[in-house]
Image (cartoon, rainbow, N blue to C red; front, side, top):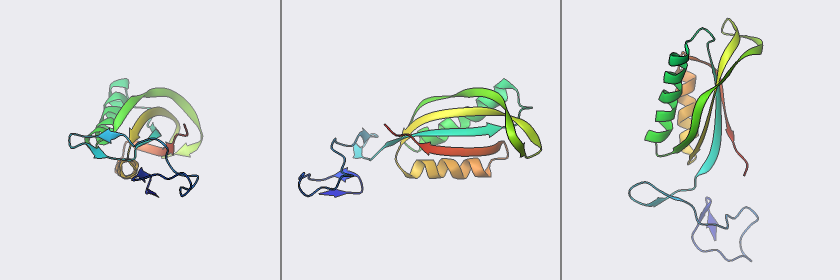
Length: 130
């Protein structure tokens, strides 16, 4: 029987098509079983920021994921691009991309902190399909 993406006992005849056929990953020092998924966070900061300031912002949000128990594959400045419309008085922005794996509550916390940050003009967190 499948419950919340965590497999307790799996009988193929009883499972729905959303059943996870492999065991969830064990994360943390207490070997808690968590259902982790892969995410991609893309956010835009002001174009007037220096590379060191952009890197510091990327490290700050990387730290948010890691302190909550997630793992970050990469967090780096993507490029400076012209935006389709003006956001916060800016026509360009530095795009930062972060790939990470975490349980479901971590992207919500990351989004909350990005929303409250004055440095982030726009952000979006996507669930990556395998």
